[in-house]
Amino acid sequence: MVLEKNKEYEITIEDIGNDGEGIGHIDGMAVFVKDTVPGDVARIKIVKAKKNYAYGRLMEIVTASSDRVEPICPHARQCGGCTIMQVRYDRQLEWKQSKVMNCLKRIGGMEEIEEKMEPIIGMEPPALRYRNKAQFPVRRDKDGNLVIGFYAGRTHHVIDTDVCYLQATVNDEIIRKFRIFMEQYRVEPYDEEQHRGLVRHILTRVGKKTGEVMACVILNGKELVGKIASPIGAKSVNVEQELVQSLKDIPGMTSISLNINEEKTNRILGSTCRTIWGSDTITDYIGTVRYQISPLSFYQVNPEQTEKLYGKALEYADLHGDEMVWDLYCGIGTISLFLAQKARKVKGVEIIPEAIEDAKKNARMNGITNVEFYVGKAEEVLPKQYEQTGEFADVIVVDPPRKGCDEVAISTMVKMQPNRIVYVSCDPATLARDVKMLVAAGYEVKKVCAVDQFGHSGHVETVVLMSRKDK
Image 1 (spheres, rainbow, N blue to C red):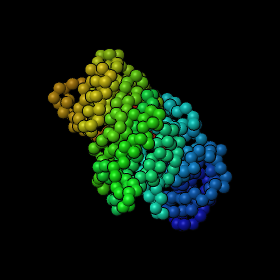
Image 2 (cartoon, rainbow, N blue to C red; image 1 turned 90 degrees about the vertical axis):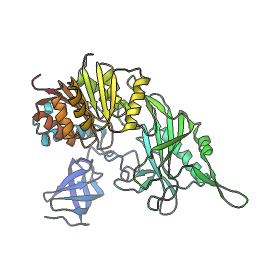
Image 3 (cartoon, rainbow, N blue to C red; image 1 turned 135 degrees about the vertical axis):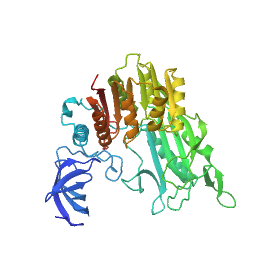
């Protein structure tokens, strides 16, 4: 049976899908419904009907699940950031634990994985205000009003909002003052379709441990220009110092900068930054390791949970001071510098040159000398290093992007015969796929631990410890 598009049905929600949407069945067909919770009885409208599944829009909650809560944010249903804020936090953690376990079973073929899974490491409830980075798109709505906020899920429609409950509270004041500044000086927001206008985004970063604050304005131009009244009418002027005066007294403000992105692209940041007040960077800590962060730096958005994630990776690596460790997809060296505190030598690989420069700076800043960093693809650098040196690794740590590890990288990892592989993953499906390959190559899963880095979203991080079977 194919369900009828635009027809309304009543459905009982039974499970949660990969992106946090509720799943129920109508006449045996799976139906995915955003904003629902297992246990809900809901009235829905079918918006897309395929042969074997359908998508529905929530019209009304007929009977609410006992796991349903009222989201603190009034924009939670529209915004793409908090897809499961309507689910009780303890149930969010249970679902994420099950998500990791089910992927390892279904995709990885590990039927007995449950006994190897440690309890998920969650945040302190209610898991709010944890993000240290925000990117606010700036636009005009169809009525010409200035809007600053976040994109609605799967769209480029900007939801105007004064508060995001996942972001640092200082952002509320930054955005309030920026609204006043743009209106006062008639600074024009960006028009994505016409590729006109000036202000594209506002980027903020906050050092969770240092309290240092950064504000960066992304421009479709090289200068921040507004308009002021003159005897002959409004004239265009550079208003950068007016912005500085508006923002510099916000507690913790350390860096105010402009980023230039004049390309017609969805990419938020351009390659050029210009500091107009304060420092080029802010600093923060993960554990005892200090990091220098620029507008372009990759840095974990939830450092408190990152410390727990990396602490688990370090525990699984089981270092005693004489190990040779490779850290693949090392970014700005966050895991590498953690590992270097207990290893003989750490070698990190990352494809982004700027990230490697940051990694080297962070190593120098922390006085860590037993690390080396290489620019390039892990699947290219690792084989080349192995062929040139024949060097075996005691431990390999991988923290790949969502697509997982390249097969060549996995093959080379196996050739290097590390005693232990510690796999840090942001996607349970690609994790399961890669772990299955490593198991087939002679490794076995010893422990698995999920970590909630992004409360109220469908994302989950996982650390897996694998050991060579002959060891």
